[in-house]
Length: 424
Image 1: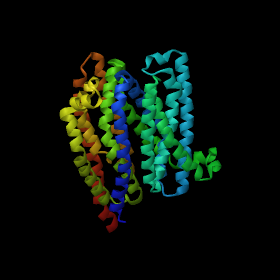
Image 2: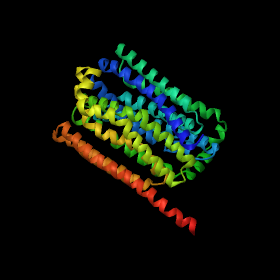
Image 3: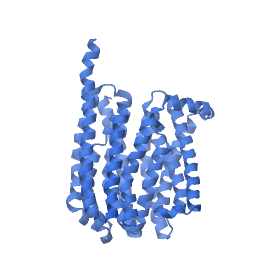
Image 4: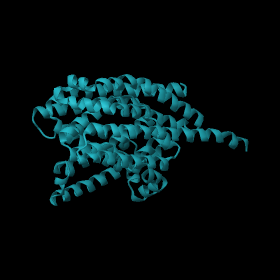
């Protein structure tokens, strides 16, 4: 099978499983928005924001080694490093949460003591195992199996969330999500246990040597991802802090629904694109051509769903999720242009990783963290949410265009340098 056909086949397979998983999640959402109040969704959105930041830090970005390195030995060692770091950081977060509760500092956050001591550390561990499962599946072309697990995760998560709402158990949304990720954690842990050499890979000397060989991952990639996640989650955190959990809940649902196309196609394309680059990404001409074709295809895929939300978000959300969620639809209308541009640009960050452009990426991440925090901090001056959203969309869409242009310029420069190298 040709490279292009294999790439498209893997994307299609991963997308098919993700489409089913997202359809299941969407189906459960119709019930969950009638079982949980917007304020409960606000608490859940803030929890997931904090969890995503901590999960990005807990792997040290060593999970990328599983797919980008050539040898199976190094991939297995990377998985061990990910698990060791995740367990260690989970313990640190749990102890810090306990101290915060004892000192009374937890009241300053829109989170509970259980979130800080138990649920956040557990999510970190489950998320690390899920990353191991994802990248090991891509490495070994077990994409069909991974897609099946994603479907199982959605079914398990939704069933538990609905069941706990019926039992009036709190926090049902959080517990259901954690148990869904636990399924993927189990699969990732099983893959590593079957790889053997576990005792040797757990030795401190082996772990230190591995860390020295791959120091650029925690030094450049992990801070990028942590800060990027932090700046992405800052809006819902600031909205929940300075406005209300109800407004945060509307924002969280709007963002979750708009992110569904990215989860279906954007992540699938980006992940398989990473697999493609790990094997064939030394040719800048082929890489540039593939990236441009992917951008165009993503634009065609996303124009209809994002356009529908842009012009009729409040009506769509009111009908789908109940009259109490019209505000979420209005927020989604404002965010639809931004999420469409993000969706189209999904593969770009993978190019930054392949071309070792971590410093350039870091500048964009820092800039995003600054302008997002500054924009949503305007809520402290009682500026309405619509004005804040429009300002955010205008600034970030401009930043994404520049981000893509920088990647293209680097590929053009590499293409221009090839004749000089071969000619000399």
